[in-house]
Length: 430
Image 1 (cartoon, rainbow, N blue to C red):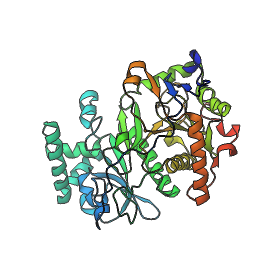
Image 2: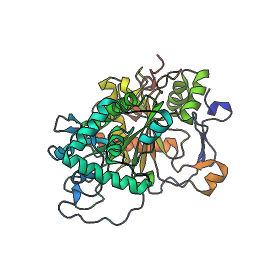
Image 3: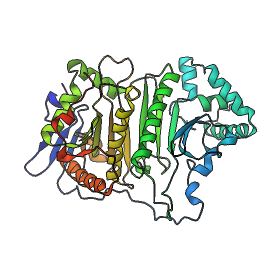
Image 4: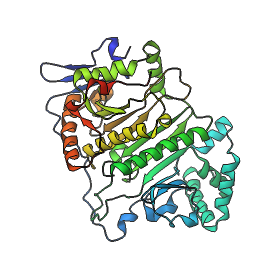
């Protein structure tokens, strides 16, 4: 039984046009009040700054001319075929051009020290050897020394270069970064490359690279109960840099939302089918689908939100076939393209934690961070979402149809009324 089924209808339109929602998995109360839906989606920005030649590759620490401002690289994808290179030494960072890079976050949410002191974790010999090899390269030692000085100044807990190297290469909070900060040929710094600006192929490589990284982090940190995967786009959504990147953070608990959903699942193993997918079909909220995934306009979210569900029987992202991963990527890419470059978004990945007793589908929630909860929300715990699910679906279907006509979307995507009830059948508990 979902939270909404305990006493509140998930989705109700009142005579005056107000829409009241209750999140089926969260119980969150949301109102959409008439007359607020036409407010601008894009966040206010400073005036664009003109670029001079060379600016486009050094706008932030994630840019390609500033590789040494990030931690030692765990992997990169290079070339038209996106070949994966592993553990590129500091002295070879500019020998190839990385389309996507993976490295540890310099300031981790859950640090290497956390795992060491709280769980007794010690790095395996392969990671110790990598740290030593990195320091044996003069360029690598200089790199670690600079990063160690930054960390020491921030934490006021000094580390030796050797200790810093081991933590920097062996951490469990990674970043996956795209090459371009702005589009090729950009003349101002607001011509950003969001997920939707990537081609479907580029996004698929970025996406699959993230899935492989998730699998590696989970295997490398035996004390992790879960690896949180998310993407914050633009500063209002929590991004430090306006440069496309995802983050993966190992944590030693599932988090309260996963625990809550597992309790709901104990009473209904087909919870997501009944509370989410069937509701979307009943209310006409299916946005798009392909052969392995489906998008719904979400109900009961604080912000306008899409829910992208895998239709596969697999539960963990890394258990999906390449075709099933690509299907999720294509729909997420389409939503980012329809959203636009200057709308702040959060992309959140949800999946069954390893060892959980009940099946859970892989789903990705994409939120438009276009409003700020304030005193009303804090006092009442009723959230004002300016766009109701029906309007969100209408706008997005219209934009997806335009993008498909332009050839900007992957093949095989069914949009709006092209989707059938069968497209909303989830296979996670089969």
